[in-house]
Image 1 (cartoon, rainbow, N blue to C red):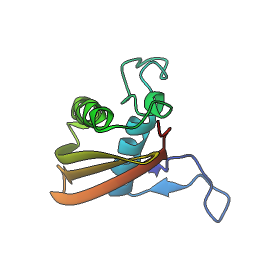
Image 2 (cartoon, rainbow, N blue to C red):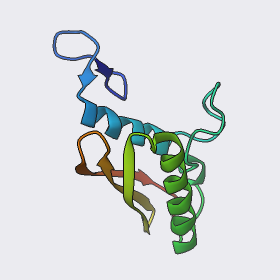
Image 3 (cartoon, rainbow, N blue to C red):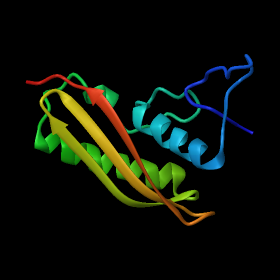
Image 4 (cartoon, rainbow, N blue to C red):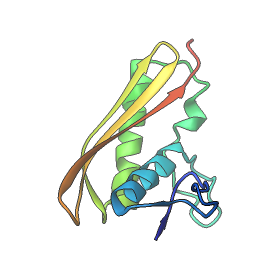
Length: 121
């Protein structure tokens, strides 16, 4: 059983679970939204996205985030997925991250999108 992320309860009051594909998507979300240094035993884990939320959004920021996120996913989840594409778009005060990947075990192509408000500067 894979525990759903973020932690939550299901309709019966038990810990919510996720199927394998959902769990992989949850791990990508956790990785993208974790700041380096935040995890006690894995201080290198994370993408740095949340640390830049209050920085002015720009094409340069989006490109830097794209490379950081792709590198983090390949490092931490490369045994589970093959990353096909990572796009980071910065529009007004919103940063959107799109990750397209293939689950190695099933060869299923998936896309996950994460959006966070930023600071238009």
